[in-house]
Image 1 (cartoon, rainbow, N blue to C red):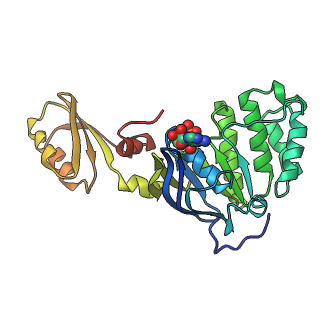
Image 2 (cartoon, protein in one colour):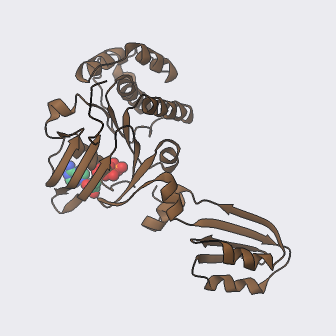
Image 3 (cartoon, helix red, strand yellow):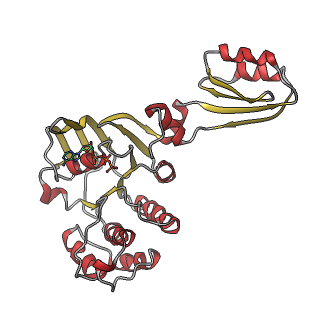
Length: 304
Ligand SMILES: Nc1ncnc2c1ncn2[C@@H]1O[C@H](COP(=O)(O)OP(=O)(O)OP(=O)(O)O)[C@@H](O)[C@H]1O
């Protein structure tokens, strides 16, 4: 792995902006990713994830602001790309080369490849490297790019929605590879609109909406910032519990049936528990919201 100073951010964007005519694809985005982090970059289609990544990789010139990879300006592509491996959202391969020839070509570009691990990855991803790339499905092309990236010892892996063509078994392998990369100390920047994926593998997450970063937090922190979902089943209707709606920490009090209440709790549960103690509760469920529900708070809708 190329040596890098631990005091330098793996990725840094400072007031980064990109306009395409009237479209502000990325607006004033500032973001630091620490070395060794698995950072999730979440946002619905069109939020600006790919544009941000292209700016970070020096594939686009920013309208304003700066981007750096381990302290190297993104525009200094020769130096920056010795420190990273990139899997684009749409993987294009050379149609007349075999998978293996594509992998060898990609290995020649990057910062060095662990050939033993690459061989293992080919088996784990069930990829036949002797077929010509033109015969590969979208998922297989994605696998070639993933195998190429995971097999490098680049300190930074930039993955742009890399699992859209993978089936669930391969998604599991993908998650294992992320964990292995993190265990080796590689930094991972994973763009995704799959909340479950990010929830499963990332230590921190940035949420992008209409080109703007609306939140950066650890997953735990993000959940804590948010509410708890509470469901109580009652032995009999308890009209007195309507008063829960007046509590400032309670939102969305719902009665799906006369003997089931649901509410969202965004503060200490004491007052709610005291009120429920007076009712005849037969079952109580308290759970953390999923990232989908957290998204709902930011967007007002769950992105597809
Ligand atoms: N080359 C371009 N010219 C004009 N507009 C562009 C260009 N690239 C992106 N855009 C616009 O910028 C916005 C952000 O697009 P971007 O592809 O970065 O989003 P995304 O979050 O990666 O979405 P997706 O998941 O669909 O790829 C969109 O409105 C898109 O139409």
